[in-house]
Amino acid sequence: MLKIDGHQHFWKYNAERDNWITEEMAVLRSDYLPIQLEPLLKQHGFSGSVVIQSAQHKEENIFQLKNAVKYDFIKGVVGWVDLQAENLEEKLEAMLPYEKLKGFRHILQGEADRALMLNPQFQRGMKSLSRFGYTYDLLILPDQLIYARELVAAHPGQAFVVDHLGKPDIKNQHLDDWAKDINGLAEYENIYCKVSGMVTEADLQHWKKADFRPYLDVLFESFGTERLIFGSDWPVCLLAASYDEVFGIMEDYMAGFSKDEQARFWGLNALDFYQISI
Image (cartoon, rainbow, N blue to C red; front, side):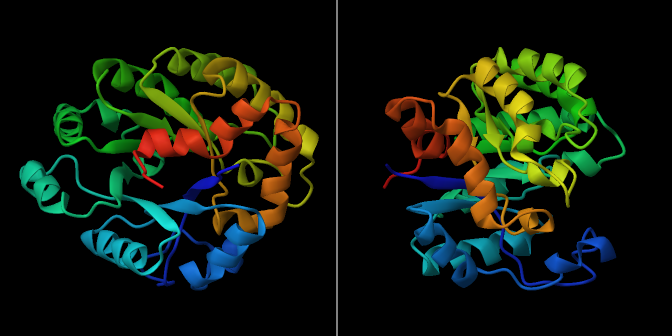
């Protein structure tokens, strides 16, 4: 069965740039590079991965694309671009030669304006993404799911994916409001969801596999097996779990699904969404 890790990161640690990595996250204050991830992918039967931006500047795209050229297992890159830039289309056109550049992401979860994605300039930028055929990763918190629904509805031709389930509060077992909003978002066929980042929304030191089942049940009921993508969120997952443990959570959960359903979840959905050729 072909497997693709649909969400992971690389960086050369820079304390000034990576100021989101606090003292409590000290394990992440190090370089995390393709040479470290490749053996983990092979160990768990993955054919490749999609690397996602973690910094918001143009050098980030250069760094990730250089890695993608050097390492064949990197099947796609989700970079960063300022969607509100006046010369956005010029920037997007300049990036077209990079075949592994599949889409973009902005760290919307950290914005003071929780509804920034509905800003007219942002919406204009989204129309440009659609014209150029790029995907868009939504990194948001639960309070932003209602805005995401409006954004997705306004751009039916744009391919969206919400990262990390929309980051529900698994640690405190807050389920109902998140479930209502994620169900509403899933009504739109142009949005997928990544089953990623769960362990870092749970109790970092004391999580159990059973903690995730209610949230996974909601996701699979809402999106089905056709619009869910596995992502390890390595190395951020190391705050709470090893790669093997993250993989094991979903390996156990998926055991009761058919081979076709498992194939979609573990790899085919990522290929379809990011338009990856293997």
